[in-house]
Image: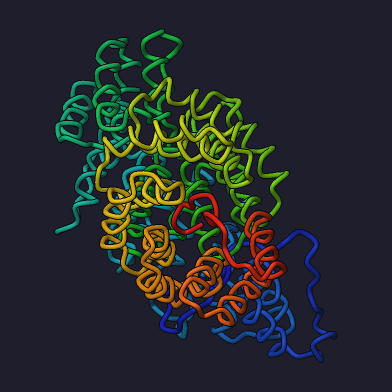
Length: 563
């Protein structure tokens, strides 16, 4: 990633997650034989988001005689953030000059590495409360019972972890205890814990899947279906719960119990999610990397890592993470969709559409929605509408899908069908500003329902007073109603917000022409040609400039705000 701050030491460390295969490293000789030069190169790599390369530079600096604690800490941090937990464990700071924050993280990393190698006794010692301070106490408390189980400490394994005023440890410690009770064949106690966990209104996927799996293993398939149905009542399209319900209903084999390493990885997911929810992305990423060291097949962790990498600008690492879920897994379609968008955002629409089609071929409805969206972005509107029709058959009445299909119909020349969908969507969601703007502008541009359309775009602008696209719609409404002075006022306001929008510039030129400001109109139309307009707007501007006659009719098709 690009410049992700890692607050694991008194100094602010800039760390990253990966580098492209084949990136060349400067050698000690290249940098004047200086360990300090390698340190600076490593720091530069961290600042540029090349974590693995940074780790290699720091390692070279150490090999070249650089024993400074700062170099060691930076090398350790780079390895953790790159996901090389084995190397990070070997580099974990322990010296008297190392910061306490780095040493605490080092103990956590070493404990996880020990568990990854089935060394429960060593992990248990590293996770002891007296050596584990803020901010890792909660994660250590949740891991400790699993380390005890690895060490053969049956009594310690089933003790519920506690940490004062820590709701995450309280709740997910109970989940860990339930799983470990089952491993100890203390089934009644396990079920008591599971029932307590799922008693609330929205227990969450992790808990529902754990309890449902337990019930399936106990031969209580109908009870398991009821558990999954509870989650589906809140999230009807949750693919993971749907797959679990289908499995339980057909009796196709209960999921196995978590292994000790898988259970430990699950224990780290709760503090990871908690840190991310609190905008502590750096520590959240650390816990995700540690979880993946214990369970490399934990797909939801890969999706979360990919999202963090993408947000930070490390597209290579994001794509690597999104590529981890395998075909047939519940997360595969979502991962392929995210991978596809990474290519679309990089302007590689051919690769993006190929991947989106692969994801949609799985039958996943969300993947089909992604494909429909991507087809729309690539102006393949007719096919987008076909895909959305398939999804609407399974999700009738979804206003977002109706809106999307209405746009696709409109852009593919089927306005009557598009208007029907947009009206239906607006009936379900009467105050949605995007819908109000799109349908209102559509009517205005066609000279239909003008008073009603004006009121609609006025409501849209009231909800989004800083939206240049929506203010443009309002300005165009006044233009079509013949109030050219008011149109100029609103379109100038829109141009201040989105000066580089060719459509707004085109509209403003038309409005200037109508009030006699011909030179300014020509300037706006010339400017349109410098702003990469679509073919229709480009032709309009060129025609008006060449003829000298000004605007003769409606400007263009309606737009979705923000596009």
